Length: 403
Image: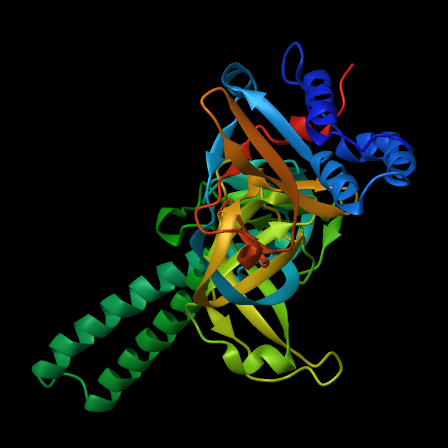
């Protein structure tokens, strides 16, 4: 009959192989498969308790102090961290309504020149295009003629006021002169406002600087997002020449399901992420909440302002996954670096025992929950003893093979 397994002997040989000459990266499942036939054969002639001890010890690793230092291993404990209940919502980045300018000519004309390109940054007042129309000449001429006539009628009205004070003319003649002056003033003011729409300063207009061309000026600072007209094209008053957007401040529009709408209120914290960059959070707060449920999607719109990020360029139309946090709750957690994802599960290396010269670690399975601020919830924390020490840095390489 074969002799019983000697756990200490095989354990020492195995750990000697795993850890020489420096810390080796170990894939425990590989060693388990390799040693399984050996344990099954020996187990036929030994007690079950001996076999179970050896199978368990395959998931252990012994490290010296030097090896701990070379691997950069750090230890830590389970701690209570603040996590929050949340509502998951998806949505898009959009422009704040007053941060987009659609530029057109109030009176139409032929597009002579476009001074900007798509993507170009422009300041408020920048001339972005030139439009030409013979009617612009007529409008300026009408204004100048009206201004000269208004000045004459004003003088005539003032003379008749003096004559009326001396009873030289009748009151009706004075009223007639006043009416003519007021009508001329109204026409002058109307023509003046039209010129202002064309960005022509009436006070600087003279008979010697009349022009058939007008300059289209940006009404706000931003970037040119679209150019919708071509040089030489005749533009009607409703035709858009180009658009300017200001993306310094954006808005996140989220769709929240009806069942979650009752928990919404302004000021709730939001953490939004781009699907391709889930490790980059953008934080904001609920600003506005819609007052009507979409009867087709059964959702309500939630809006939050986003300030342009200095490092990552945000653009209107980007899709974002978001969490709206409701309240804080204390949960058992470890640093994310302590959990090792392998073979469809999460694992951790926990300290089993420690001597003056060596540390023994055991691999244990984790049941994880939500993540926040570098920590991950440990839902099976009660399976570990109080004060248990875990490898929180340098554990990943211990579960991998190297040459």
